[in-house]
Length: 182
Image (cartoon, rainbow, N blue to C red; front, side, top):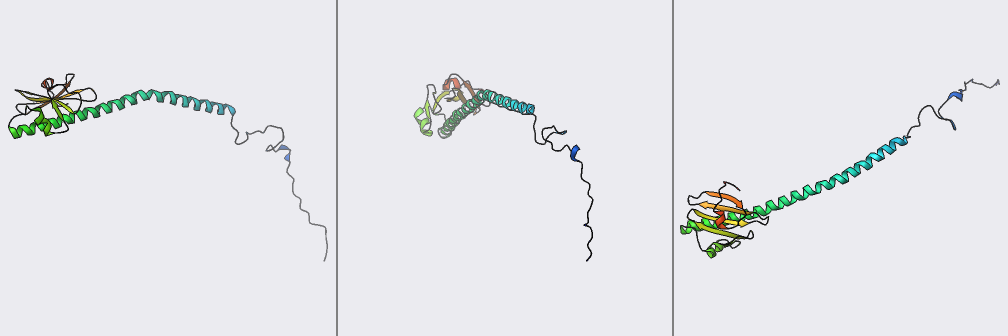
């Protein structure tokens, strides 16, 4: 076996004096990845706080309109209940007219036709009390809604139905009903 000099490969050694990737104490030529400018952090923080404040102050302004909307919906429900009571009163009066040939004048007979309603010749004070009036032109009824509105219905001698509302809540006042709908 013959031995010779060891095999040496010449590898060039890179010159690291000009590598700018990592140096202690000196600035790099390009920004370090992941660092954020503190001015941007402050700007974003101010915008988020301003957005939260705007939301808090503007959301309070909507409460008044929401409350008004809820009250309006409740009033419409009360009005519908009063109009429903008037509808039941009309059914009672028309049923008795078809059975007897005339509108009944006896309030006890009318109240017996629908036990959920109380008929009176005085003013109506609630949706369960129907103010009733008879006249030559037909009959009329009025019911006070819990919203405060008084609803009227009138059926004339020909059988045409008219509707209305007003401040006076009596059957006599309901004789003035003249609208085709509520």
